[in-house]
Every structure is written in structure tokens, then in C-alpha cells.
Length: 53
Image (cartoon, rainbow, N blue to C red; front, side, top):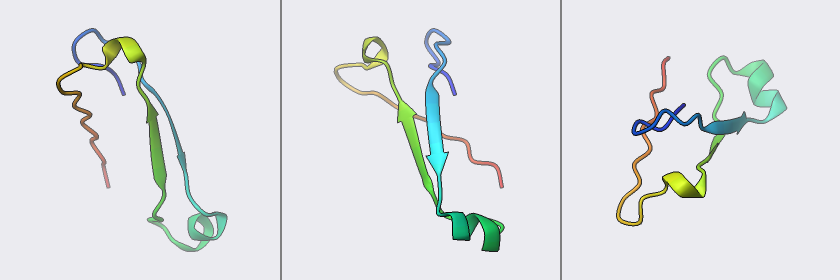
């Protein structure tokens, strides 16, 4: 993941329940994206997430 305007890399973490990751080939989980303060636009900040299945 990165910022479109300047290419700054965004760090992220993901997690799901252990039992879901073992028993489910497509488990539900959480995605947390850390956005640095300097790249946040005061009017609108857009985050585009492309999820490939």
C-alpha cells in the first residue's frame, strides 16, 4: 500500500481468529492501516483497497 500523490509506503497489520484461519480458507478479519499525519488531507483522505480473491 502506498500514497498515490508521493509514493509514501503505508504500513498495515491484519489479523483474524486462529480457529478461522485454520478451518476457513477465506476467513473474516481486520485490516488496520497506519496513515502518517503529513499525508492526511484536511478536506478528504481517500484510501483505496484492492482485495484479490
